[in-house]
Structure formats: C-alpha cells, structure tokens
Image (cartoon, rainbow, N blue to C red; front, side, top):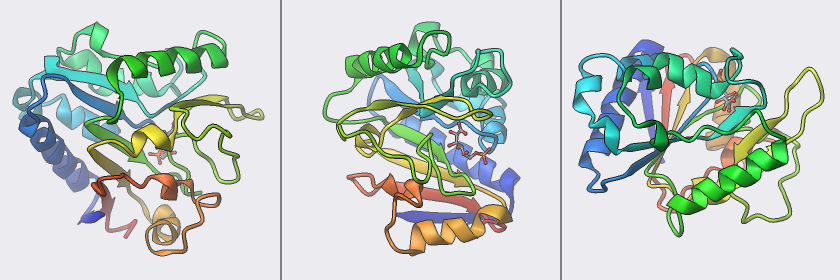
Length: 232
Ligand code: 6PG
C-alpha cells in the first residue's frame, strides 16, 4: 500500500493525472481497461485529463472504460456517475463509443447486473482491470458497498444490485472479487470530514462490515491512497 499526501484537491488531481498517464503509457497492452469512480472527488481529475497536457499524452482509443458503481437513475440525472464522467471527460476525448461500458439504468436492476457481468466476462478471466479509481464515503463505504450491508452469499460475483430505501436510490456495484485482481487500484480521498474514517480504514482493525473500503485488498498489493492534507 502506498500513501500519497498532497496539499489540496488541485495538487492531488494533478498528481493522479500524471500517475494515470504513466500507468497507461507504460502498459504494453493494446487494450487498457479502466474502472472509473463516481461521486464528486474525481470530477477535477477527469477535467484535467480532458485538458492539456494530459489529453495529448494519452492514446485514448486504447482505453476501455467501465464504472465501479452506478446509481439507478436516468443517464441525464445529475446523480448519474456516467453522466459526470461524460460531462467532465468522456465527451471531450476520442474513445470509441463501443469501448465505453456504462451500467444500464433504464432496465430493471437485476437485468442491468446480469448485463454488466456478461460484458465484464468478455474482457476478464483471471485478471481484473488495469486501473481502478475509487472514492470513499465519510462512512467508509466504497463503490456501493455500504456499512452493514450483507455481501451476496456468492463471493465470486463480479457485480451486485444494491437495493435501497428511499430517499436513497438503488445501485449497481462491482464486487471486491474482480476489483481486487486489478493491476493498480487508487483511492482518491479529500477533506477533513473523512480523516477519522480514513485513519480507521488504513490503520485500524480489519472490520470490513463497518468499513467496506477495507474490502479492497488487491492481490498484487498495488493499492494507492491519494489523499490531501485535510484528509490526512
Ligand atoms: C458513488 C461513488 C462512491 C463515492 C464515495 C465518495 O456512487 O457515490 O462511487 O463510492 O466514491 O461516496 O464520494 P465523494 O467523492 O462525492 O465524496
């Protein structure tokens, strides 16, 4: 596990953009698979990747884009993670539409889960993604794995439906099984409100039912925490 502490979200986003360019450009693979995070933290990073110099440093048509999780709301809903990524990045760079795999939110949840699992199985077998970006909530959740939520009995599942009680919305989420087989996993965590939880997740006792972010344990141990001073 590598901890990278930066002054503020601006510097953090700049450094993560550099790090992502390095990971992508150093990969010898023709297809580079990336799972994007939702939430608000990565917005600044995505905007930087869509701007010079980073937009010119990446051969975008090598990238195949996935999501770590999605809220079951229409694509044009401000809460939709794919919408955020398109608005800040994907609509501004040349990634073929066939290489961008959004989690369907206009079909029943279980159908969307089955569809995403099928798509993932056309890409992955033993290994996971080349790069996974993750956020962490103040409650220690990541992806859409929330404290106290029971994981499916089938730990081998790659995708799961997360029912919700209003006003929360149901969600679709990747499961640790696939994520933990990825080459590089990066958490982006900023803000003082997350500092206590972050300490428990990284330094505290292993209690993933309370801090689901602890479920992220890449088999190759390439886990990066990009945090700002407020979160540190
Ligand atoms: C989501 C995200 C979620 C997010 C954390 C942090 O759909 O909400 O996938 O896991 O990364 O909630 O969100 P912020 O970046 O907005 O703090």
